[in-house]
Amino acid sequence: MKKTVAIVYGGYSSEWVISELSAKVVFSHLDADKYEKYMVRISRETWNVMLKDGSKAPIDRNDFSFAVNGQHKRFDAIFNAIHGTPGEDGKLQGYWDMLGIPYTSPGVLASSLTFSKSYCNGFLRQFGDVNIAASVMVRKGEKVDAAVILEKVGLPCFVKPNNLGSSFGITKLKEADKFEEALAKALEHDDEAVIEQFINGTEIASGVFSHNGEVTALPLTEIVSKNEYFDYQAKYEGAADEITPARIPDSVRDLIQETTRRVFKRLKLRGMSRVDYIVQDGVPYLIEVNTIPGLSEASLLPQQVRYSGMTLKEFFGLLVEDAIVGS
Image 1 (cartoon, rainbow, N blue to C red):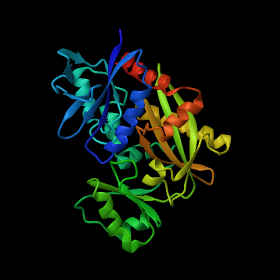
Image 2 (image 1 turned 45 degrees about the vertical axis):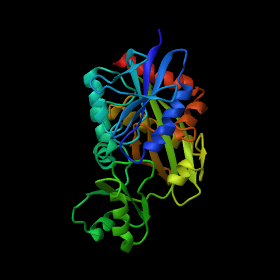
Image 3 (image 1 turned 90 degrees about the vertical axis):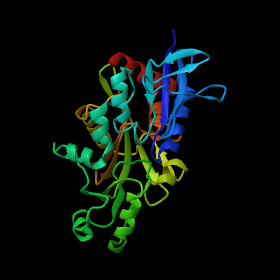
Image 4 (image 1 turned 90 degrees about the horizontal axis):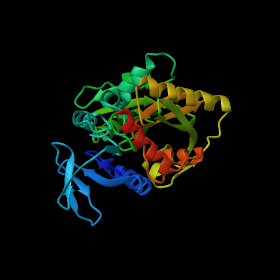
């Protein structure tokens, strides 16, 4: 009998548009012979199952079920494709845990920790075996001394929202007198901002996934942005060359993949993740950990999956089955 799977997307942040693209790719590739699959759109106003005839069925939030054609349906598993809150920060994970519904992303604690770029990097920095750029986090409403911050991180630097991805609200800051403007831009999207040291080098994306207790690192992707950095346009509108496998020495490749596996285990992640690095003078610096990476046709992790020899049909099915078995 087919398992019923919810492909959950949307969310409460500006990343919901990217989340929809990811969910559509998952829906199109997840094996219809094995799974009865439904797109489930979550917004602040409504939670709806998108039905085949174009209509919508509301989710009963008491048990995350819905009714269609007079039949009450519950989900056997959830493919979590929400980028941003409440699907990437642990909120929905706690809700699904209470209902006993397995899902493809990490649990509450791991999701909450990794969602904050500052807290996650601070946690990893304490072990002393991962290179991480210097950074300072500030909260909305705090009194900020720009001179002190810039003395620590230097110029140029990046100013970005702490709890948001997809390059929304990011500024590459080159001049100290533009600090307030860059900070305000980041805080338009989040209550916290990170001011981060600029590492000048080659950007590398390292995908990883777990299955049957084994953690596998995917081939690395080298990102060559046609813009000044890997911004929204470069990520989603083709203004970057994404080269898989990355053109780096084997020794650096092996170091990055081993670091990614170690970080995955240390953070107690599960499912899939993507860890981003900048390689400067042969030394990889970890930038951030993404526990629900983009899965659109243009995204990095699907490229890595295909290069590894797997189809997306196989990969997405593997993630769903691993979630069910591990629940």
